[in-house]
Image 1: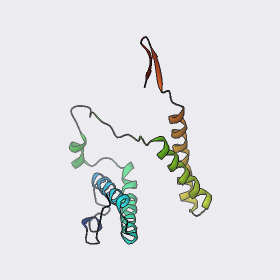
Image 2 (image 1 turned 90 degrees about the vertical axis):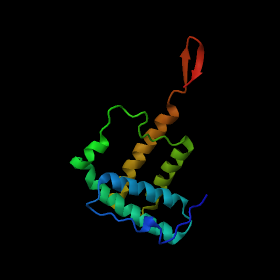
Image 3 (image 1 turned 60 degrees about the horizontal axis):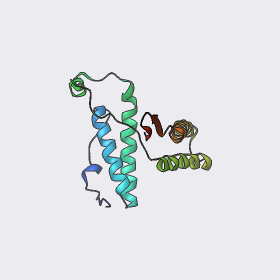
Length: 148
């Protein structure tokens, strides 16, 4: 189902700046990209890309800063969570990611800095892709061979 947004939609007016907590910036990024992949309107896509880019740019420098005191309680748990964030794309999707990055680098349309970042990402993704494709899929047990 395609998400229909309008420029009055709250995602286009959500306030954020360099004082916004990194947790809120991360939430904003997730909301922007979720709407972006469902959006069909070119102008709205551009606006969402701009919002996402701005939010990512504000988020990046916060990664090396200490966690603010007022956020520590919300990031503290008594028990380990049952689920951890993981990156588990399907093999065909991962292959498409690698191919897209390769094509971007072949087009030579990226700045030197962006080309370096894309190259680093491509290296990580291709390594992960290769390891995923070569990973064991079955285990020999006393009961026979079982699927992992």
